[in-house]
Length: 260
Length: 260
DNA sequence: CGTGTTATTGAAACCTATCAAAATTTGTGG
DNA sequence: CCACAAATTTTGATAGGTTTCAATAACACG
Image (cartoon, rainbow over all chains, first blue to last red; front, side):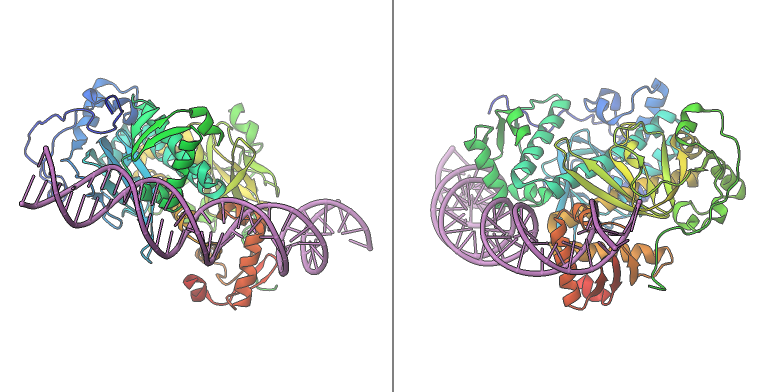
C-alpha cells in the first residue's frame, strides 16, 4: 500500500486570488478566474506545446484559468451543454460517457492528469458526452475561441491543437479495433497495458496502481458486463499475470499480458 | 434498377491541364497537378466552408489539386505512410482499415463523395490506417501544411478544419457506442440508417441504393462475422423492413429499422 | 461461359450475458 | 473509531447470441 502509485492530487494548486474577469457567461461556470501557472506544472510536458518562446508561453498561460475542484461524481460538463472551452486535467481523473436515447450509456474514455477533455464539442458547438470526475479533481479551463485566436498567430500552438485532435481520432480508432476484434480477456489486458503505459509516461509506476473506476465502468468502456471484467481479473490472477485486490492492481507479467 | 441511387461518378472532372509544380516530393504522389474547381463541384456544400469571400475561395482552390482516379481496390494511402495531405472524396467511395500486428484487421469507416480522408495522420505525422477505394474513385488533394497556413489567416477556414476533425471524433464515438452496446441486428440497422441518411444529404434516394462494400467489410466495420451480417439482412427481409438483392438495398420501413 | 469471389443457410460449439447469492469494500453517522 | 448501510466485487449455474465450420447458391469478371 505504501508506494502504490496514485494518479491524483499531483501538486498543490497556486492559490492566486484574483477577481473574476468581466465576462458573466464565462464566470458563471468559473467562479474564480485565476491564471494558470503552466511553467510550474508537472503536466506541462504532456499538455503544452514544446518550443514556445517565454513570451508565447506567458500569453498562453494568460488565457488558461484553473477552475475550482470538481468533486468525485460531479460533472465537468454534460452532453448538450454549449461548448465554450476545452480542459486539461491538472489532477485527478475523469470518465466521458455518451448516453443513448433508450437510457443505455457507454464510457468512451478515461482521462488522467495531463489529458485533454472537451474536444467532443468542437464540431456541433455542443458537447456530445458527459465528463464526470472519478475522484476529486482539478482542471485547467481553456476558452476555445481564445485558443483559436492564438492558433492563428502562433504556429506551434496551432500544430499542438491539431495534434491534440488528431490524437483523439487515433485513440478512438484504436478503441474501435479493440471493441470490434478482441475477446474479453484481450480487451481487459489491453486496458491494463494502456493504463500502465500512460501512468509510466506521467512518471508513476507502470506496474502498481489503483483503479479509480469501477468494474462496471471498465466493462462499459470495453463493451462487456462487469461480471465478465471481474472474471478476467480472476483469470489473470490465476495465471500469475496480475495481482489484484479490488481496485489495487499490480502487474506481474507485462509481456504475458501483451501476449493474451 | 433504373432509378437506383449510386454514390459514384457524380460529375465529369474538369480537365485543366497544367504542368506539375516544382515540388518533386509532392508531385511524386500527384502526377498531374491541376487546380480544383470547388465552385462548380456538387460536393462543395459538404466539404467546403461556408461564408468565404470569392478571393478566399479562389485561394483555397489554388492549394487543392485533383488527383488521378484511384481504381477499385487500390489504396489512396497506407498505414505508416508519411502524412502530407488530407483528401476530399470527389467521386466514388473508400474504406479505411487498421491492421493489428497479428494480421487481424478492422474497417474503421466508409467514406462517400464529400467526405474527408486522411486526418488520422495529423497526430503522429504518419497515417494510422489504409484508405482503399471501394470502386473507381477520385479525390481532391489538400496539402495539410498549406491548409494550416490558410487556417492561420482565414478564420472560417480554421473553424472548418476544426469542425472536420471534431466531426471525426464524434463519428468515432458513435461507432464505439454501437460496437460496445448494440446487438447484431441493431448494428446492421444502424449501419443502414446511417448510410441512408448520408446518401440523402448528398441528394440521393435514402431508400434505394447499392452497397459498395462486401458483407465481410460491413461485418468488419460492425464488429461481427460476415455470416451474421447476412443473417441480419435475411431477418430484415423476412420482417418486411428491407428488400435486398445482394448489394442492392431498398429500405421499406425506415421507422421500423430505427425501432430494432 | 466458366471460374473465383461473394452471399446465403444450417448445425454445433463457444463465449459472454443473465440471474442469483455471498463476500468484500466503501462511505457515513453516531 | 466503530458500526451499519450501501455499493461494489466475486463466483456459480444457466441461457442466449454469435461464431465457427461446412455446403450450396448467386454473382461478377475476364
